[in-house]
Amino acid sequence: GQCANVCPVDSITERYEYPDVRAAVQDKDKVVIVSTSPSVRAALGEEFGMADGSFVQGKMVALLRKLGADYVLDTNFAADLTIVEEASELIERVTKGTAPLPQFTSCCPAWIKYAEIYHPEILPHISTAKSPIGMQGPTIKTYFAKKMGIDPAKIVNVALTPCVAKKFEIRREEMKAAADYLQAEGMRDMDFVITTRELARWGREEGIDFASLEDSDFDKFMGEASGAAVIFGNTGGVMEAALRTAYEYITGETAPDVLFQLEPVRGYDGIREAELKVGNLDVRVAIVYGTANAEKLLADIRNGTKQYHFVEVMTCPGGCIGGGGQPKDLDKDRDEVRKSRIASLYAQDAAMSLRKSHENPDIKAIYEEFYGKPLSELAEKMLHTSYEDRSSIINRKNTPAAQAGTQEK
Ligand code: SF4
Image 1 (cartoon, protein in one colour):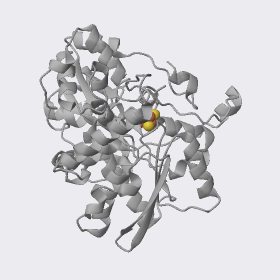
Image 2 (cartoon, protein in one colour):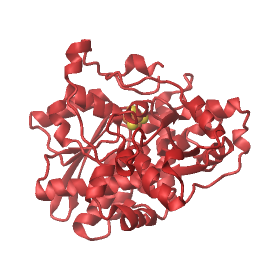
Image 3 (cartoon, protein in one colour):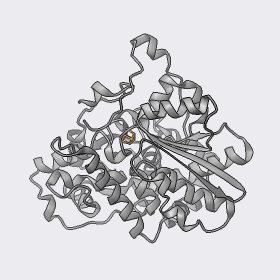
């Protein structure tokens, strides 16, 4: 794909995986479980002629069921899990100095690989929390499989994402926590990644009339999510979601209204920052998208002109809503399309009554029944990861430190 030409870290090979998923749904011995990322539901409709940013969650779920998925779960569930783990980690760093500040977010695999190659010195700053997809995979093959009485060996885990870099992420060596837990050698946490465009293509090949599909709901247990998880797809969304939870964890008080529409972190500028009183602490945060902006911010942090507690980095313009696997109509103004998708996700968050990750009843249940508490030994094993200095690649491949992103082209 075109992403392979522009990706600064060569992490992108846009290989279509939906034929593999189609083969899995036709195999009666397999249980195909699809988990959907937040940004897909704000863009999939565009592939079928609907208005930019149409919110099509119900039809997306219906389409997956029609194509033969046995279960449709929401990666937003794991986004809530990510927030609980990542906010807990931030608090440990701030209050106990367990690791250096600022903490950087970890859910964008293109950013992770970029840091591993070009900035290995900041790896201790990057949250060890896996991305939502990285948490969803092993949790399905252990907790969900047990709860539903499914043989984990039969599960084919599919992530539906806006992102081509996730195809690399799920194949990282360490993404086999379920295999370690179940002692099932060769098992992968997540088996396939298909993008928004791939799903649309598959649906069209099957002759499905998307617009006339009746809305369907996610399956139980790992299908419920908060508004905080919905906004993960937007630049600034992870930060806002994390602050809602961190605020309540630190102060023991209800998060103030401002955290439900945190204007300085919203918007479309490539670098944004905010300061917020959390108890006695003035928490300073920054949000960037694109590796060029990340470079600027890193330089400011290095030379001491800027100091932050928490920094969100996404590679694509506008965040995952602008991911490389999203619909791309070249006749349209890309920025306007992305802004429509951003507005779509914020509107959905605002319309929900559950807007804080740690208050999601399914999240409370999973800690009670399985993980114990955030950062527990099991949570560390299954939901956290480590990073690798890959800077030697630069010399080997003589790759220039290109400043390009992985965005839709
Ligand atoms: Fe993938 Fe882009 Fe989102 Fe990063 S910002 S996770 S590369 S879609």
